[in-house]
Amino acid sequence: MFMNRLRELRKERGFTQIKMQMLTGIDQSDYSKLETGKRYYTFEQLKKLALALDTSMDYLAGLTDEKKPYPRRNG
Image (cartoon, rainbow, N blue to C red; front, side):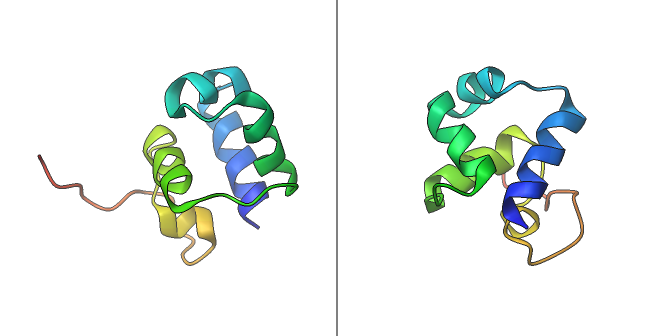
């Protein structure tokens, strides 16, 4: 589920894997492996992905079907 949501959100935003690398600092080849399920993500990677895709970590992890991110703290 995570891989499908990750790919769908990236495409909805019009981002390439290279753009995701620029936004998250996750190497494009590693990012590709995340999308295909050949690699598991770390907590920090999931956090960066959620921020870049303007969603919640819970949505990416399949814990909710709500794409909208939670309100974020300032600071």
